[in-house]
Length: 329
Image (cartoon, rainbow, N blue to C red; front, side, top):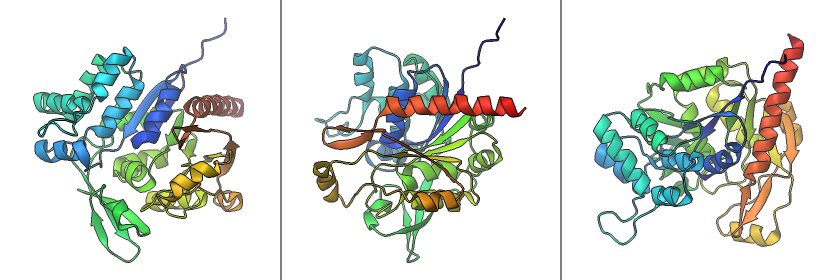
């Protein structure tokens, strides 16, 4: 009798809207999902709660939990609800307040996430990149040091590197275990310097990724980002990742082939943003396998990754790589 196939263990590392969007697509497939989420945010509701309660910011965690939740739409909408007509609560989302309350009650941010995941029936595991408050810094090319995730893009200068304080922050053991047991590691999509790289600057996470033998996929952003990746090509994104990791680690990059409509490009030009160009020769020289797919969609005048298409390809890629590894052994 044929042995049943084990569910693929997929670990996604990042933050922001891009991560949440991709997870909504992946949760439709029979895979074992773990999201490792940045806790470098210091703006808005998350930043206020971070400062008031001396905890990791809950915002990106909240978005990921909502994306992976399997509850009635009204419950998810309530979790994401943002107060607007109160001086005290204005700007706060209910989910952020709930995570903060649970952290204050239990004394542990990761425990609060586990408990809230049960309440929301989260389809997967959500882990913070660090279980403590951290601060993201950037060194610009002129040597200026900028402190604070929300401030980095406002300088609108090319970034040389980003780093964390404290510099000896430790990841959760569950995070390292998830990376070690993964069948596929995914990075992005998301803001390069303020959503993806803060996770990789945690030494234990970086070491575990470099030690991993499974395929690593980078899902490149569709558009450049003012203040972070102005005029960056796909190869520039990869080189920044490799520079911060100190070694090559990306096996495959997923790029969009669909042309961005001119009407959409004009809207993004007002934000000093444009489609990410892909220089296939440079990527190949970096040892990257280049995959080009029609994976974008236009929603409300903005271009986004088509989550289901991306997820479908990722699951297929994981299965194909496992089949190749089995043939080699």
